Image 1 (tube, rainbow, N blue to C red):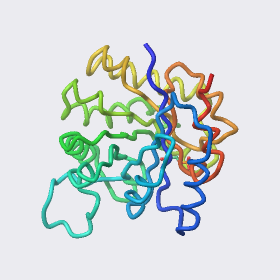
Image 2 (cartoon, rainbow, N blue to C red; image 1 turned 180 degrees about the vertical axis):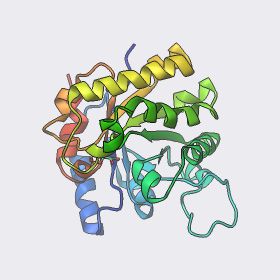
Image 3 (cartoon, rainbow, N blue to C red; image 1 turned 45 degrees about the horizontal axis):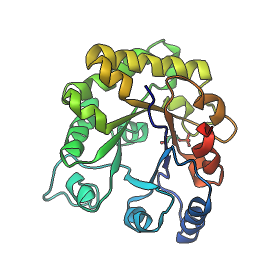
Length: 253
Ligand SMILES: O=C[C@H](O)COP(=O)(O)O
């Protein structure tokens, strides 16, 4: 079966100025983008709504995080609470990014709870998983990724998985310029699909999109895009440049 190619641009805490944002939006709006690819931009929270209104070319927006509680006295979580995002027409949220897991001490269970809360609010989730350098060198890649996924499997129903895009992002590849080789990416993605087949269902394994993130650029995206279990990309640094257009079009026939 064919899974729709998906390319996300995670701007993280960039760009720093409104001028840079405007230039990026102009580049994306005027580009000739592959209509077969689903494109989502996750800007800093202040820009989500303005971008939702100004992006064209069927480009959607995503939050970079959301809190698991639906409402209440949680000062500082503005625009992150899942029902508020959904009510504002934001379709996606990124959860479990390694920067959240590491810098903000988010546990597998917290990520799973947020994922459930987001789905209950009708948000779709870009769920990030991945091992760090030491874990890869110790041969623990599959064990780490399976553990991260199992926490989510424990709280979701099989039907929930139609609203999830899994982003495999090896931490050692994020922002380092060291992209996974096609062999490493394919092996990890195939392992994730096998895990879903075992722990959820063959149908979910077949239908769930598994995208790759970590130093994706215009130079390496074409090779990765041809891999059977790579269904797209989650792009950080390169999504802040014009080469993001080439990455979106990497699957174009
Ligand atoms: O969410 C995106 C990833 O962290 C990848 O970032 P990067 O493309 O700058 O390596």
